Length: 426
Image 1: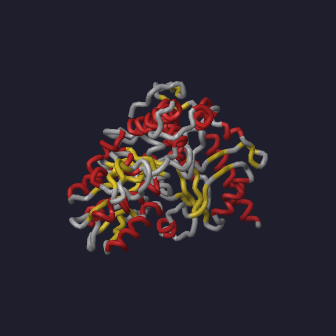
Image 2: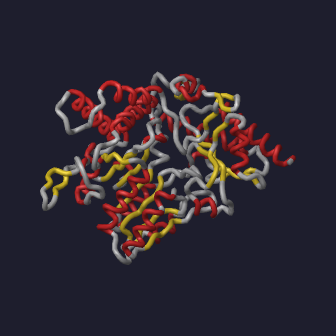
Image 3: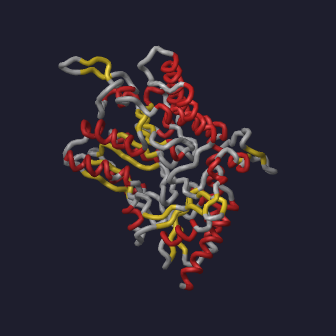
């Protein structure tokens, strides 16, 4: 992979490129915050990332300079807002290499994007005796909508199992995906195991039996180059808040010919082309799926987040995350009575480490680290079946992003040693 040079990168003696974390950190005001008398070490990026000034300012600019509704006015503010709002959509389309911005739908988040497919596409295309295939490592957002669809339609949900090393059993996958499969839905990167799944291969298997492929990109789009055309997926869902953008807005990419045939799942303003007392006609893509006043400010800020990540270079972002993940895996080998979940090979996973202790509850570890100014995640990570399948009720997770450093991982390891020692003495 070629790593592009930018103002946020620095060369290495071997001729490679690394992110300049010191320069990046200066863009994130929250990283200067003191938590319990310590400078914040934020390692909860798989839940949500922090936001650079560039993104924060884009929201301020909208509300201070051209706050107006889009698509509906001829006055200056409305025209300006519409132009910037639609340019953000085009930026997202380029970011994931969508063939057209018409196939980029604004949603509230990844969950809403998946639910849109479950209702608008699923109810029309899944029938009694059909099946939806997903994986045993999915986030609840990519399990529960298919369970509910299956209940409504008399269909079945099938799960591709996860092997002991955290990888999907692709031999079983080929048997599960059959002529009655209507949809295969899989996360690109696991928010618990860190596993990078072969979603392109799953798409080929799905298409061979006439099924469609949905990719949950919530963890991958913020971290690595994602090309929907190269993956061959029919749908891709992701959220802005994990990729330096604001909360409350996400994206659904849908193959244009598929989306054209789908019916809207919400009705109201802007998604119609004509209304009479007898009925209505739908607007063109993408507006057919965007009823009502949209989240204008946060769509614009999503475009600003894309600008920021483009400047970093997604190849550089991915290399940085994988390097931190590999370093963390190596450091975790020093910890007795701690167990790391997911692949042991750092080349097969992203920049996060989920773990648990033989006797200390993850919540106790999380609270102990918080007293040291270190923010991690604890719980089942919205993947309860997966976590329980490891014989535990909860796990701790440290997840890394563009502004994290090896020194912060060192602090995490030292903190875990101290916390485990403290609870052992109690």
